[in-house]
Image (cartoon, rainbow, N blue to C red; front, side, top):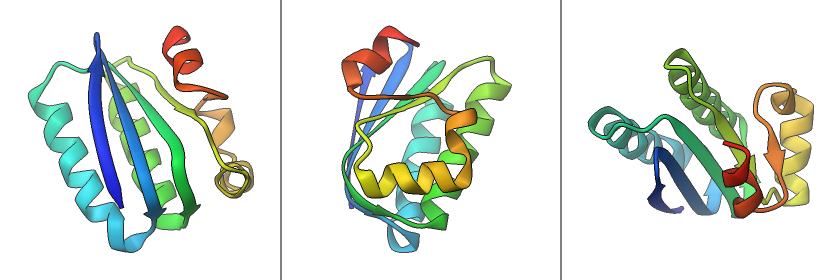
Length: 111
C-alpha cells in the first residue's frame, strides 16, 4: 500500500494505492494520526482511486478518522471509489456518515 498526503487549505487529501487491508492499516493509521496531531487540519478527503480491495480493517481505519475529525467539527469525505470499494461502503452503511463523490475536485468543493 502506497499513501500520499497533501494539504489543501485546512483539508488533508489522502491518496491511497494498493490493498487497504490489515497488513497496511497500522502504518496508514499511524502516519495519518501523526499528521493530524501536528498540523491544524479540519477535514480529510480519502481518495480511493488506487484502492482495488478494502477489508474490515480498512473500514475501521476510515471510521476511526471520521470519529476523530467529526469530534473536532470537521468533515470526512471519500471520492473515486472503485466498484469493489463502493460495495464495501454500501454494505457497511458508510455513505450515511461519509459523503462519497466521483472526483477529488468535487469532494474538495463540498468540504
